[in-house]
Image (cartoon, rainbow, N blue to C red):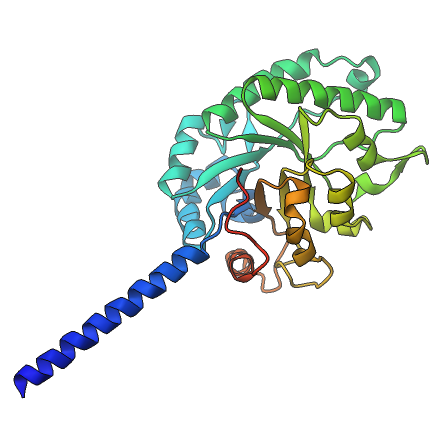
Length: 302
């Protein structure tokens, strides 16, 4: 009897191990590359002091939720969240993540636009590019810009971005622009701000990180833009009014089904707020949505 019970126990253990192995393999298959814009959790790590105190633990939590990448939003004078680039890179990688992209920019003054003078701006960009390259990032994204008063001023901005983009390309990096809703308005009632930017920047030097939520708020349709300007959207901000899929107003299935046309290489989640008031819970719900969505591929990295 004892021998029989032992055989039964061993058989059950083997079956359980096989089941666990199958489940683990299933979980590995379900893992997807996805990033989080760290601005989403600014209340936890929004400045250098908070990052020094909470950053490592919060990044560990993001990795456990399924995130594989982050996009930063705190660069100042050669440092990222108050840290030297190499030190920041180490903290991120220790959490099992990769810092892929950043939101930062030098905004031209009215005088610089009027004179089309980018001298001081280019000095600033030299340091900025070097810092983010040292941190292991691939993409630098201007998060916004002022609305130009005239088409002539918009031309100056496009020229500026082309020059910044070339400087990034020379350093082995990529430069892009992130929209809100105001870019879908017209300048001087003549041209659509966003369309003009895409058409008057060099695709070799400037890509666009479309924020799909803000595009919808600007009464624009992301998929139409993907088809009109194929290959220009290397990054996407995957965002909703709150958690992804919460509002029903953003067609995420259509967006991801046309990701190849867009030119997508990385997706980045961003939250403007949450239904529960708990930001980490909201971040987790967004991760679960993407992991469970059949139309989201495991990776878009080329």
